[in-house]
Image (cartoon, rainbow, N blue to C red; front, side):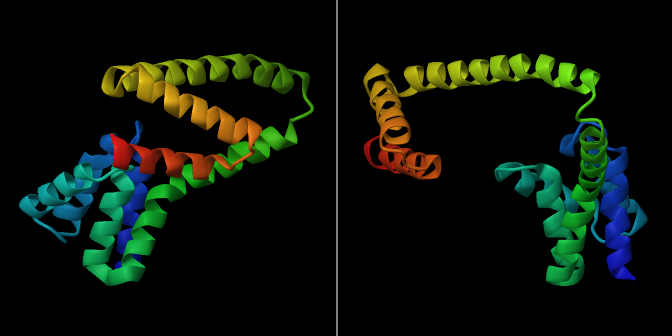
Length: 175
């Protein structure tokens, strides 16, 4: 029964929390603190502070921690699954719909219009990263990382994951 309660405690906020993890935090608090009384307000605020201090989505971190506290490793698995299940179900349904109408002229036109928007968003993000890097570590270090990344990925054909790991190591040692 505890696993079903964990599932509901995180599935319902996942459905109703429009806007992602931060929007669902009050809903999760209502389930965890008021409805099931697994934690008090102080404990929940500590879990929230811990979740905010770690990288990644807040809702899944909180679900994993609370699920583990309530029912161990299986509880953590159930709570995290319940948190991502609404998005997962919706994505599968939408993907099925998109796949069904993939040859439709309207769908082809829609994807044709979306591609330039994605390209612009990626360009803006790259410019933001470049600007932040230039301001943070200077032009020389930025240029070294850009040239090394280009040469390794485009000329030597090194996998991007290794280039990223190398850039992290470079930053850790030299910056």
